[in-house]
Image (cartoon, rainbow, N blue to C red; front, side, top):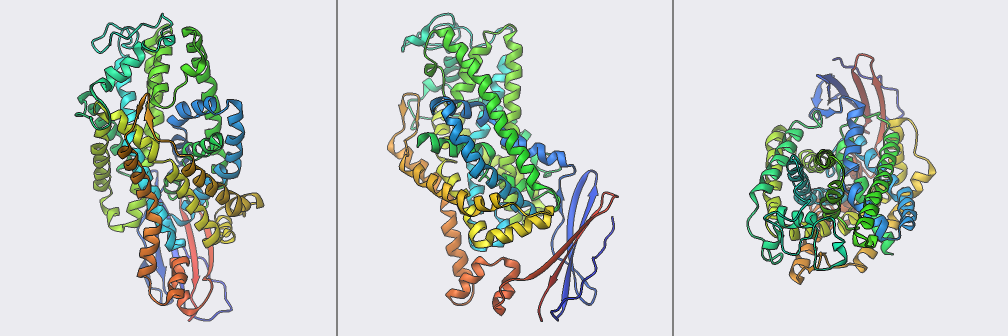
Length: 574
């Protein structure tokens, strides 16, 4: 480890100079950054704590890909593709991928990498927008309440697959009802009959028959609680040390782009904040978003072959087989797997795949919350392990509601409201804050400083005009076309829908609440407050002097001995 300071070129502006020295060192495969201010007298003042960076480039890529390629690729994309027009759905999907998905994905990676902060801390570039950081942190937290339950279900199914005969093949089990009819009949033509796979999920796993609705939840099931506890323990030990260890057709297409790519959850910002400053985030954005879409297409091909087989087997229309969400993964897939030779082996492989898809996505969501809050509240840095334990235990306790007899109703409510309109709203505010307040030109300069080239006209037009307009339209349409949630034939009572809206609004309201708080807490007149609120925190002293922008020069150097040095020169007018 060594340190160096780049020479200061003469400037036309007189006055004292302060040089910020940023040192990156590597230890046991993990890189850390630290910085200090060097005054004209030669005294060094620490200006920040050490920050980890990814030990290897592949660690970052695999983490982002692992987060983006998740269960939504397996159950949500194929269902939407079928229900919303088949091949016609691909038109808005690809269109939105080009004009919004990839530009916003690139934007979040660059934002986190340049500012080296979590979802809230990055808004030091425009303090009045910090509320959107807390919005995306809350969205990730809410999604974790029910997403971990999906992984627990997959773990339960995995344990059940280690048997000579899969338990969802026949109707001779204790949980089966008189309406159950085995796989060899064309029972789907009879509305009063059910399949063994359906009854295993709803009666054998969830015990849904013991609940009359969302107002009759019952106690948590100990089997699912145990599986959930295992998931939480795995998440904790994966996260405690940080990154060194880890129309309707159109609105649905827009939501799927955000949900599948992971834009708006703060995860991309959190992950990229641990990158080296000079990492090529443009290339990363292209690679990971392309892999995500290709995975969705591939899973769609595979899944439709399953659905076509089941449709032919039961002699029913395809829409009788195609279902959304848990029904597709935990009823239709297991039923199809049960017909294969060596079905137990295939079942084990399938549910291990679900576990791997779910765990890394859950880790990303948790990391967004932990990084976002520890970067914002610096005292938590010293107690990351305890804070991580608090977050995962809190998530576990809330998730217990979803493993009760009526837990599927709570699960459905959370899935409907936690990351629907709110995630579109969050990304909209992000785009406005960066493009119109911080400025596309300045943001482009930041990217050029990192990777050596400015974003092209296409990216800048998307960031400033196309993506914000598209997102604003989608937010309005999502409110206007709202449909109340339901599970099967069960319709939620009005109070449950209101609770769902309160959950959704609780994250979105952080934007105006924080803006109001920030504006009131700043000194000076109305114009002064506004100037402070939209000016980067590092330039607040220039607001006092009436200057527009701080003069900043940065140079970067990386040695061949796995040591990197970055020097930032800040010129202060005396």
